Structures are given as structure tokens and as C-alpha cells.
Image (cartoon, rainbow, N blue to C red; front, side, top):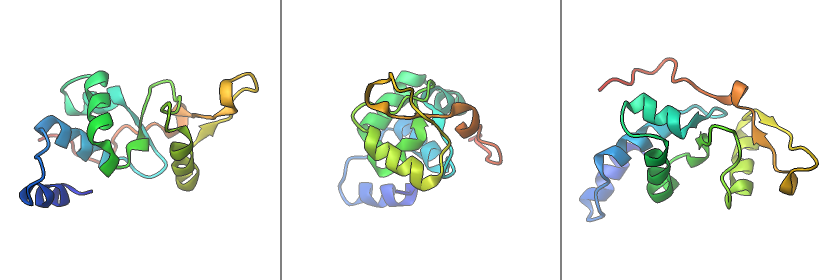
Length: 126
């Protein structure tokens, strides 16, 4: 959902998003298909908050943006949403590392060395 769409929705009587949440969601929308940023990367990009604050925003408001592109630094898929996220990653061609046979559920991890996006090509100053 674009910023304009969220603003129209807010004008239609829906609760307005806190400014920080709006900024986090804008960054999530910038992440290219097949790439990811960590919660900490997003906070660093915004020069505000930290991984926990970004995670809280994504948990509360992230459903309207490509939430699967904002991830844990270790590449482990979000518990409870692994299969949904995995479907998106495979569809987008996000680099994955196969799970070890000993890992629970054999769910792959994101290959952070190849999938991590640093925001190149986007001006993030306000």
C-alpha cells in the first residue's frame, strides 16, 4: 500500500499511523523484489529507533507492505509465517540457504550475504 493510499484511508476515518510507523513502512516498500533488509538495517536507514522498534511496527502494521522483505539478521524465517514468507521468497527469487537435515522442519534460511540490500540507488534523507 503506497503512502498516498494510506493517507486516503486515514482521511476516510481510519486511524492515522504514527510517523515512525509510516517511515518504516515506506522503507519496506523500497526494498526490491528478491532482496531483504534486517530490522536493524531499517532502523539504521531511518537513523531512528532500533531493531525492536522496527519489529514492533512490522508486527502491528506490516501486513499492507512486503513484510517478508524485512527480516532477522540471522536469516531465520519469521516463526509462524515461515511458509507464507517462503512462498514469497521463491516467487521473487530471493537467495535461500537449504536447511540442515537436523534443523526443525527443514525450513531454509535467507542467504543474507546474497539477499541483503543496502539501499543503493535510493536517497533516504528527509
